[in-house]
Image (cartoon, rainbow, N blue to C red):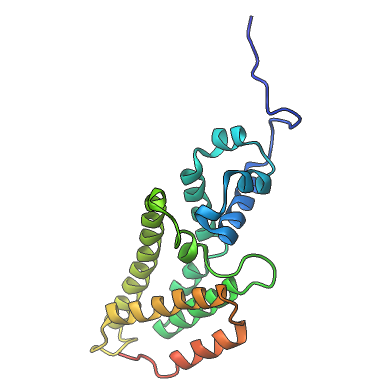
Length: 202
């Protein structure tokens, strides 16, 4: 006789995994990796701990999936930036997109990819490494785009694309930190406009 496993008491087994992951992403974005406890996550997701593990794996794996969702959702401005026809357009869209995403009127401030594990203990080293790799990948994409801009004559031949890419991505990550600290959108946009006024800076 087949024995059927029971779902969590008082809660149907079926749930919208996509919606649950969206809520987990928001919880990590707001509280960081360590700040988002299992009870915080499951409450936000509307599921039991058992269901969370069954659907998404452990907390680190859930965070990895949440970061992937963040990259293709709120942080997809990077893709749009890289598609701009000029290097200046790339930098402008990257900074504008960062400001828009990190200062949303509703929802978490700052950037999940920058602040997600800033205060993580030794047990969160894997998450810190994951986020460092995520940020480095963003830099690499911008670097490759600026190299192409030099090859195509869009940037002066003496431009250092690696230094320029580091400059722009550091500005973007700095914007995220300032936004999390409560700096308003208009002030951040004024800073970005000033930073790009003399283009390229190197």
